[in-house]
Image (tube, rainbow, N blue to C red):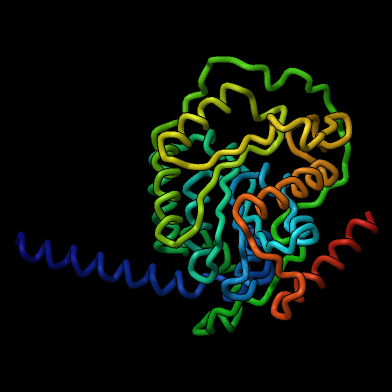
Length: 316
């Protein structure tokens, strides 16, 4: 009886895994567009970029896609960058985007915006993410409502590109008074052990793929303070990572908190992002000797994207 039970259990589990695997193949988006059910379309626009054309990959939560404009970086220095940022991004999601990008890209620099390091999550969420990655049916189960003929056996072909390269444009102005938000303190904001481990693993993965993994804190009066700065400094020292806190560069970046934020200091608007991105462009070029691709034939689509980006700005 015991042997029969084991055999039946084995067959049941095998059948279940086959069903989950087959269903996952069917529901997984065959293109990186909203019409095909792709989640986080702007961040997944990187899937439509030509292989090995992204110099700088940016990961993080909404601070990343509000503060860093790849088109500004391109226009200033000819460096290609892409922001795989999503709202409230957890570090296991940052790892997902990193692994996905490394399948077709060879970034020289990987930036992790540090606000995500202070977004805690439970081991249950980490396990759930593992199942979602192994069996996409769990995160794409609602696609049954809009399944297409191509989903049954069709090949995956990512064709969509985001002209903003993951940046989310906003010209809304809602200012704040932010004179003392980075007042010095000896306090240290604690980083959870799970998040520390993910930072360590991302750094290791970048090293294995010849990419420089760096930590960057973008300006935010709501999310950032000196205690968090101290916490990231200790983490960076422990893992031997480069860390740059742009909140401390008020003379270099000249953020005007009465004009450069869209929601009272939580996120930057376009005007603040332009200042941050312009500074970051020249800093990355000088510090890490990144190439200027603006005159290279294979990168002319970036010049075209920049023209469309300019049109978006002019129309708003």
